[in-house]
Structures are given as structure tokens and as C-alpha cells.
Length: 140
Image 1: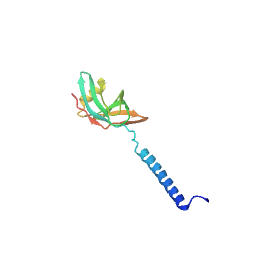
Image 2: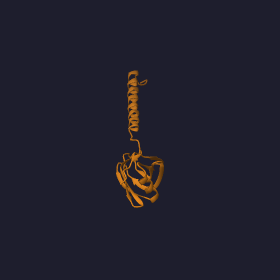
Image 3: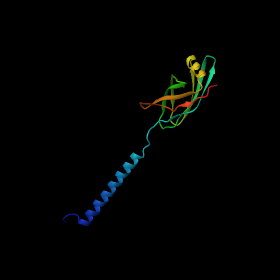
Image 4: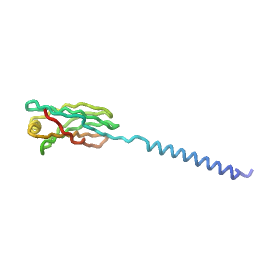
């Protein structure tokens, strides 16, 4: 015996090449199909109820993403003025939470005096931060 015949060697090389290609294809496709992690917070509803010299902001916030987020605050925009209120709320992925925020007399006065009030929710997740889109808030 002097070695493997040329036809058998070519067939073995072809089988090894096809098997390696299939393994590489499966690895790349599994890697590319892994879901990306993201947060997508949305204010579902919001309203402000004025109570004498203070007011109560009630929000419903949904996390449409696939990782949890921490709400760090709410920014209230009233006719040229901006007010920040610190919060600490956790929103699990895929869920909606309700938050009640007491607003002090300074913010309440600005809300009552303004014809349009907007809010945005500030959040952090996995070391990054962001804010929701502005939402117009009715005042009662």
C-alpha cells in the first residue's frame, strides 16, 4: 500500500470541508440571532390633580424592552420653566407600573399658571441613561 487513492482523498477532503462549513454556518447564525438587549420606556398615561398648595402627578409607565430599567426622576415642563423631581422606581422588562408623585407648592403654582404642561421620565439601565418622549399632561 502506497497511500490513499486520489479519488478517496478528494472525497474525504470534500466531506471535511462541507462539515466545517456547516459548523461555521450554525455558529454564525446562532450568534447573529441572539436578541439584543434594550430598554424602551413609554408613558402610557399621566395626569396632575391639584390639591390646594400641592398637587399629585399620577403616571403609568411601560417598559417595552427586554431588560429592566430604573426610573430616576420626572421632569415637568410648564410654559418656559422646567422642574425636576427625583424618583427611585424599578420597572421590570415587559411590565407597566403606576407611580404617584407629590409636587411641591412651587411646581404646583407653575402648573396652575401654565396653559400646557408636559412631562418626561428619566431612567437608567445597564449603565446608560435616557428619557421618554414628552407627554402632554391634563391638569384637574
